Image (tube, rainbow over all chains, first blue to last red; front, side):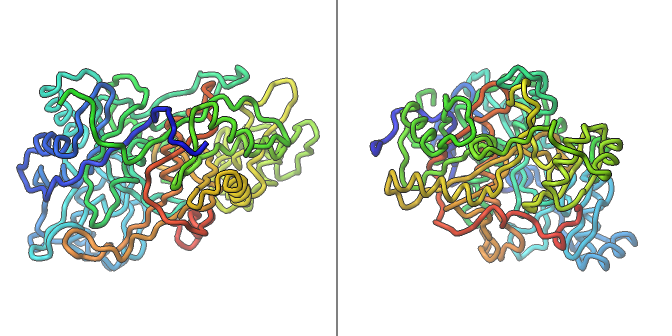
Length: 260
Length: 260
């Protein structure tokens, strides 16, 4: 029992390192293509590419200079309540449909994209100090995923290729940030296992698998969040069918949410 | 770019199939040991074994015959409110510290183990119809994980071995059930990345990685929930340090929870 296993892993994940710092108008598809090559990786049928939203945002120029943001009266009020910079709060509100909770240092909001998250996913880390910039989430991460997928398909002629754009988000009840899919193309994002039977033939009543979120959390194990800077992960070996799902399928409707 | 990659995957996950139906007093360590062998797998330093709580519960005989449960008045009231079987509600309440939300078919409770989950994690699937049994979560999943780890260490003499006991849980805001760690031994469950610096030397303010939950969600991709019946997954290749953490570290304290 002490020799290496003979079995091939069913799931494999490869970090794509060394993409460098992404700048506005960088061609992310090209950079990932080059990154795959320099990491001795090639794409194959069934592969899923998981990409950190941050590099998509940067390439799309989603920077805002805080010095040019004029806070509204509402932003000033939330800033006082939360202890956050009022210009930052203003950006959070502009990116949101509504506010869910306010606490010290955090506004939990319903993002304009529908999901609930802290500070509208706006990021100030991994951005240089010299300019007072904040980085918004991509304008339309599902569209960004679709575009990236198309570019990679043009190059590879692969049929079954998935792209997931992931963000790191906190959650009620449990500590820590998990990876979630905020953009997706090609893969099923939410698989409905209801109707499948269990081992005894009893029909499973509630069993929805958030496939794209689980893949995002898998990638998160390799991405880290600090100086490691691994902005993309290749996930291989999972069984999935081509799908037109988007990350929107994962967003729980207000009427199904006991906690919003 | 069309040949297979040369790089070894950083993360690999292997399903452990064919453990069969687990019965009370079954020796789970032995069954997993045999399962590893029949799946051509052997344990190595740094491996993490992820085990579905259901087989731990079964081996620990955590069955309750619903016919022998007498519902309290409180249970009757919640049963009426939720439309659930009052005996089942009684079991849910016995396994809980408190009720968080009630809705059609579901009581979201604070489990006696501290985490918030639907119906106290009590399961009626994959249990035969003939006897009206429900299956409770393990009595003390952290202890179960520690015991399983010890048994496997005795056999292998491995130093760095992790065991995670996982349950599938729903969540606010997003559809679908994710894998979470309800028991853990050997691995860090929550990694504090605060204090690490980002690419520009700025100190990350909030960055806690729920390592054991992310590993549980990775395994969940292979376990499925239906008839596939893959109750254990071997996760290999992750970088982690031996830890005395338990799954309790993941449970958000009430005073840090904006949603409880």
